[in-house]
Length: 129
Length: 141
Image (cartoon, rainbow over all chains, first blue to last red; front, side, top):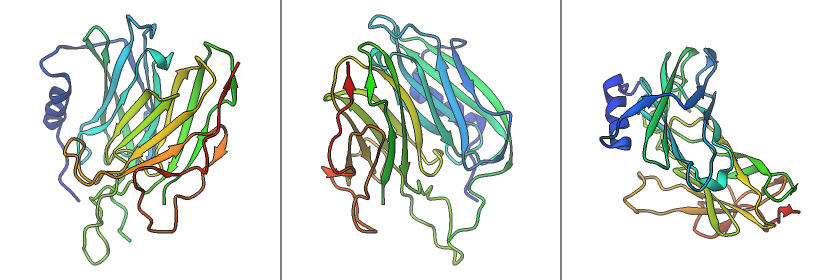
């Protein structure tokens, strides 16, 4: 098994993305199942409260994990052309852990949400080919 | 190698928000797994995914090994005019930013359209390679 990232490494990865800006809880909603059998494909949806206009929109949504080998999962870049601030994908999770979503708004503010998830079969553990 | 299934409503009212679902056939090999002989299986990740609408970028995503195999990405855009959605994949092996070994596959648009394979098995995507035979137009009325 590769070395795991730690919650401290996740905070470091978040710092790299947000710079020195303050990250406040709220505005963004991270949807994850509370328990998943197979960590190889975990459905994830991030929704942000935003009118998505030229003046007020979501610039980006970043997702991080605490205990995967690498803390970064994905960064989605949106804009007023998106119409709706909602993205969904499927991710891998190596362990039961917290997942954090951070959104960057057009006014430069950062907002976050986190969700804990229990994984019964971790990704990355299956035998090689 | 990389084929894709793209779901875009073929028609939309002007100003309507349309949901776009893309499923790309790709192993997203993490680079953390080993073969039974102990050799590391090299990392092979789609690093970047971009969607353009009549030439303007409307959505992009930076992906990491924590994205599940066969990446499934759902996002939305406002249907402002009839036109073409183009999907681009960047399979650079190295992290974004160093610009080395750029490997850009081009996935030309589609309305409920199944992509054909990029080429023979083992064919590497290069800049301009179409993953779909031709661009399909999304009609916005």
